Amino acid sequence: MKSFILLTGILLLMACDDNVQSTVDIGEAEGIVFDHVKRISVNPEIDFEEGRPRMDAYVDTLFVVPLSNEHLVAEITKMRVHEDRIFIFDERAQAMTIFDLQGNFVSAIDRKGKGPGEYVKIADFTLDPEAESILILDQFNRKILAYSFSGEFKSETKYGTHARYLGALADGNYIIYNDYNTRWKDVSYNLFITDYKGGVKSHMLPFDEIYRDSDRIKFNYLTAHDRLSFNFIGHYDNHVLEISKDSTWAKYYLDFGKVNIPEGVVHNSFTALDGYAFHLSDFYETERFFSFSYIYDRFRTIRYYDKVKDEIISWKIIPNSMIYMFANFPVNAKYGEYFVNYVDSEHFPEFINDPGDIPENDPYRHLLETFREINEEDNPVLFFFKMKSPAV
Image (cartoon, rainbow, N blue to C red; front, side, top):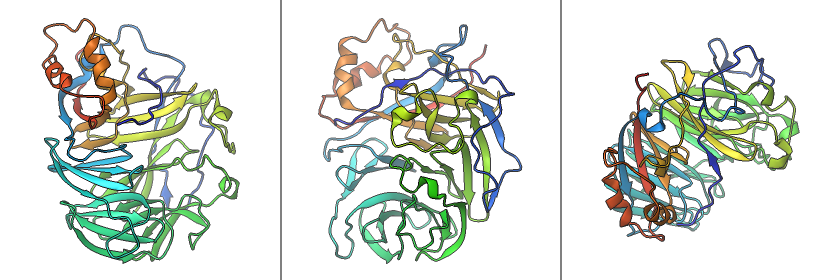
């Protein structure tokens, strides 16, 4: 699998400068509660702090899942892990692939067309665990198709309106983000709670005309937090919102201080934001930690936050560790208390040929044998890792 990966910095650091004021704010957005926002200061100009533990000290448990080559995946656009299933959306192939937790191929959903059970363009997918359904949003035909967890077609519903991101709540309602598209029947807001046919029950995030023609506005993220709520991050804002069937609240504000994007800035080029931290994404949360990433100085940086210690983790990348193999890559999903990311197969031969001075007592040294069996054209390998706070 050959997919484009941004150069990544894993330079994680301590929270700092708690007196810097925010310059970006979504204001008194209708329907959003701002009463208890946890403000977290991040200084992207510090690479890492001397004296902090090695990064492998933060990993409690790790296991890998090489995906079967029975059905090749062109790219992992979005991934969800639920019980004993791994669900992967491949935007390039416009298909879904399902594996079990051992990496065995279960089935694929590849039914492009305009007939029943077929789609023209998958914009997003989500899971409905109660119904044991994969819900696929066909952006072109404006319908939502339901498939079983084994990939069999179950039903489809004409949604009746445009949408970009889809989330399914436990009460049968949907969370919809429309991504500044004027084909949406209500262009006053961007985020909606709807019924299964698209009937709007509530809305939030007022539509701002200054963003309508921006080619770079489309980096917004809706990710499942748990069965009852979703997290949402807007491109021009550093708030992390949690959305449930009853309310929406801002629970975190990631404050980059003087390198926050100034209020009112609209851009059509990444280079226009040189010197600012932006493109906040890859937010996944466990009971104690959460992950996030952003772009600063043209590098994507991955970080983790310890909610108990109230600090951003500072770890160093040490090449003579098996954990070096996956630590350069952002989190793509979570599985209980595990974060999940993937590494393309093309990276393994280089690592195996020059693994560095990995000590004999490295707890994951045995994975070298697994990695030696991976060829450049194989499917990606998933890494499941649970974090801990090391004793200092």
